Image 1 (cartoon, helix red, strand yellow):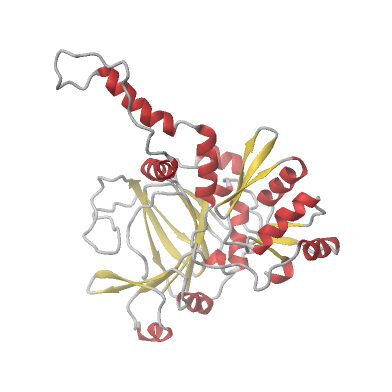
Image 2 (spheres, rainbow, N blue to C red):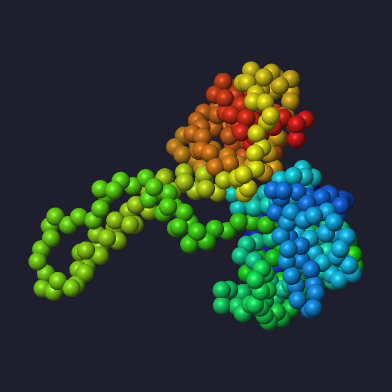
Length: 378
């Protein structure tokens, strides 16, 4: 799928993380990639993150999945919304919706959440901490966007949902199938289904917070630090007041912390592994029977194409003459032909290659950990 009459460079310059943008059906011929019944079926499965939002007594209530199949027949006439996270991990046609938006780097892409709503259904006025493209798949939805929010913006008291207490719409559109609404981080927005059978595909992006980075990077460093790496002051001199923490001591203590955090190469390796870690690490995508390198080579020689697992995350960092390839939390040092192969794997969902021996070893490893599979197996 490609977006016609859409300029990514112009979009990144004028809209990305700046202001909302409505894009009227740019797909040429839009086809809804998932039926409502299929979405409901996913919401009933173990290991699939789902939520059901219902309206009753003028208050939204949330139930977490997996949902029993009988639940949908009990919902009645009041508005409701079903949300299923990471549908792209399970449905290749939904995963294909991400491809037109890969002008944003892979490591920033999170997943595709799919919602289904009956007439009047929605999740309430809220804001997100990340960018999102809202693709209308089926039916119609009224979207309103408001002001920029932050941690001081008043919220309604609710155990499960972060809903805005005072939402004032500034713009409003009704989206038809194939239309796209881009919403930057922290912009208030509210979507309500206009009629039944309303489906929306939310392509979300990751934006790690400073607190998250400091916490997890520090935890990684701490695990590797020897106990004898401590504060020392062999040049200690007597000071006028023993109660003072002297400037020299503060300098040493501060350096003890900041020097440990300042290793850029180590940080790059850590972040590549951290950001490529699977969203749902308990899900096992490995093939039932491991493949030998010879079997992989034979299939490639016959022209078989390898495909990335939609649930896998591929990215790389250049390092000297080679690069570090990150796949599902693993790091692979790559040089020469293998580095070129790694770049191809990160750039393309489907690859047909004739790899070197070292490249074959890498591909076999990725196939056996479930990150790659031959096309007919997807």
